Length: 629
Ligand code: WT7
Image (cartoon, rainbow, N blue to C red; front, side):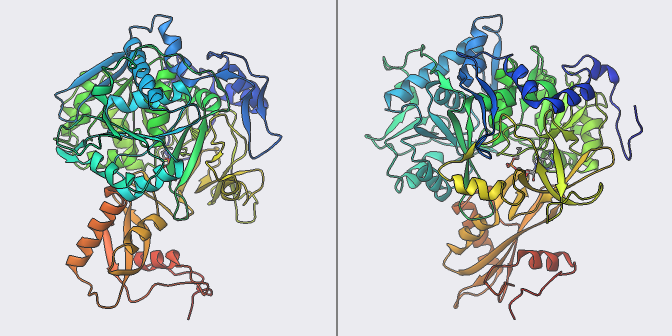
């Protein structure tokens, strides 16, 4: 092996030799020579009602299509095919409640029954193939049933993270024109109730498309029920329509599977659209290869199904590979910071996938908490969501993985659907680097003019090849799809991140280049935070920036210009933080609020967040030629 530069970890070569990819370099070369062939071979490992005619059609680029002419349904491969073989009575899903007192398990067979029942109920509400269904549920098994039930009947799910406020929920329901909303009475968050149903009621006052709301009982507090619109799920399951059998709809490979809203540079969140065929092949392949998933695995992805990580690697990926997926309702430190380690031990988790921010928050509590537990079932660790700092990488590797487990850093996005820059077990790892492009992919670092920058220098990260799980477009907004992702460098996918590549071909992600802030791995748009602030009567103008934070990666710092008659003060700052929490989401709550007389703007009136950031960090303010006055 050639000598690699820098801090490198050489995992036990036996890990690689026995993995699904014993010869990563060989496969990388083969896939580079024939990406379509690589993907066709992977797709052939799954079941299709009818085979595809063309693997990749790029005639209408950047509207790429995959497995054209093929007929399948992601549920056929996530559930149905397992029922015909030895997986039938194997555990598909294990779930534990936040307080640890409720434990529910579902074999592939019983998962199928639950999904079928919910699918029949959804159909009985008038939902048909192509219709959108909004899912606003806590981390409970019903969120998995609901997603799979929609997919099964060909409806398009739109999962909204159950921490978003009524305003955010309303705009997303409205944009998707959902006829049906599936929610719960409430969710448990560190022992308190978050009132999901009240939030849906608030949101649905302004969403004419909603005909029905299904309510899962989770917390048991009293909630208002509209007799014409709202239905308890447990009441529906006893009706004759709620049969345990339901045909899986035959879908075109390119039929939409889901939309998922994510933040962009402007105020309106973007609805990323994914399809049945390519997304299925992409999530299946990446999970299988990068996490070396085997039938006996118990895979734990700590993400919420409200984000793409939960879609691809908590729900779809593990079921497509026939593994057992573990879902925990709670977070890492409630009631004590040993929670996750206790569950790894108790459930015998073999592969564990989480975010750097969670690792950093656990590091603060010291090694005694993980050391209380037997973590020897772990075989592999993974991270996602933001760059992992080397200290956190080493802690994860040493304290959690006991220096036995590869740490697979996975760089990808809601838009990409599947891992793009990552590693497979057995490859040397550089702590802090996401690794190399996945098989069949090529990435580049470009300067503003589109020229590749020399190795080691920072620039814009682009992906050069289409891949099966790529978004197909932005729902109802083809134009923005092209302008946002494919216009800066025609023919290349603009990721929105800055990065550098080293001499060994490893990629080092630096951060977003647009007005997106990654806070604890969550993706927030500055415009969304600002418009939540401006909706408060005291606020005339606001600007949000991200500043480095030890645990969260970035913290939210806002600058606020008050309307005449309002006085700055601690009380008002606290009220504004609460306001953002209620009008956008608790995850968007500003960490610091500064009251300003005015904001630095360009002569055309655009807020110069770059200048605010430089000032806050005490750095040079750069080119100020466009600053007004
Ligand atoms: C942005 C996408 C898809 C996973 C969850 C986040 C950042 C993601 C990494 C990583 C460095 C990362 C990027 C990217 N990001 N993974 N391994 N190393 N940065 O999905 O919410 O769509 O955010 O998350 O900035 O553009 P997302």
